[in-house]
Image (cartoon, rainbow, N blue to C red; front, side, top):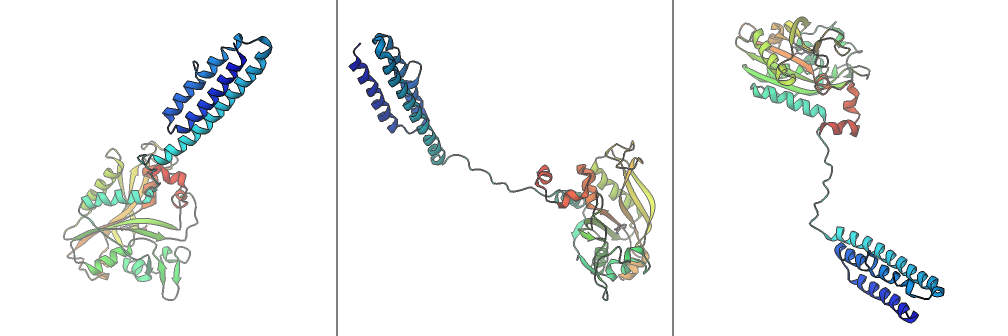
Length: 340
Ligand code: DAH
């Protein structure tokens, strides 16, 4: 075979490949180009197979030329495909857009919604009250005596010592504000932030949330309280849990009770969460104290009612099996993302 001819062929392949690749605009065209020149039966291989026809002494030189063309074509291919892929991505406006991260609802918001929904089903309305309270609403109207330990500077944040303005220590003052405004019968819940001088640890936070309930009317009795709370807890934790009412004391209810549920971590068998008792205390409740009714101008001979209060964080911790209250306030995305 003539040397001249094979050298011509090499440069023709180069010219053709370069000319063709300029016209290509998509990946499909690139693949066809690759097969035509660099494929198994492509032009590079076919010209390589002609090497034996060349005089021995010229083979290394021609071989080198073919190899260098092959390298040039591979580089051309890599550059073009990169460019085309980028352009295709950019030009294809029908690609679905990237959904921006819009975040998730906070676990406390989720549990508050779930809790309020259960009370809404029973016909309760929802009210709010101020987080900055005074001594009268937070303590006195709730029949809490002057000497009660909750009133001490160690337990309560006072904003103004003289006027006894403070950050409410519970949502119970909302009971008083509601009763001053409304005429029985009614049934309401109130949710919101409360503040206590507690050091932050796995189970205490100086800022936390409570949900309060109050039902007042004619002939409201303890079984109504029991029925409402039993329904609520069964809805929230499942009807298989056991519920226990034990006698307790609060200044604003008489009689008062503490409600516990069978431990949902160990199913009542006993574990470190329930202190090996099988039960977890979950809320305080009772029949509204006659003195509280008198304080708001109601006649305790004519109306009766029940009230209850519970910590929202505690319920969320049990429901979502969270063992440290601090997770709620640290804004750690790894924690929050689990509640999408
Ligand atoms: N306020 C109480 C507390 O913070 C909880 C509570 C107990 C609220 C009994 C009530 C109730 O309405 O009847 O510990």
